[in-house]
Amino acid sequence: MAVNVVLAVGLDRWQFAAHDSAWRSSGYVVLSVNSIRDAIEHFKTGDFDLVLLGGDISSENKERLTYLIRASSPRTPVISIERNSGEKDLFVDATLRDDSSALLIGMGELLAQGPIARQVRSTP
Image (cartoon, rainbow, N blue to C red; front, side, top):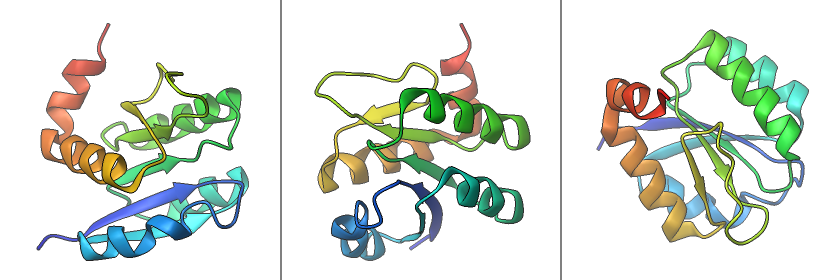
């Protein structure tokens, strides 16, 4: 089983704890950070397959962080956890519900697409 390394960014220290065992059993290694500053520092020094942005981060901060991620690693997919039902962030690769099954499926689908498919999909 391939291991995928995920940077999970959320302001609530416990936001991702409920999903941790499901992610580990599905082959994900998740580094959770609870500040934008920590996320930027870890992303600069790490090699992440995917970035997950928590629902407790403002849309403006999600967009800013996504821009910084794309500037240094345009092939790394970014997923946003929706804040309100049906609210989508258009600047990320996907917006998903805060549900273990939905997140696992969405993460797997994005990683399976590969960087070329994501790049073509996100081009206006």
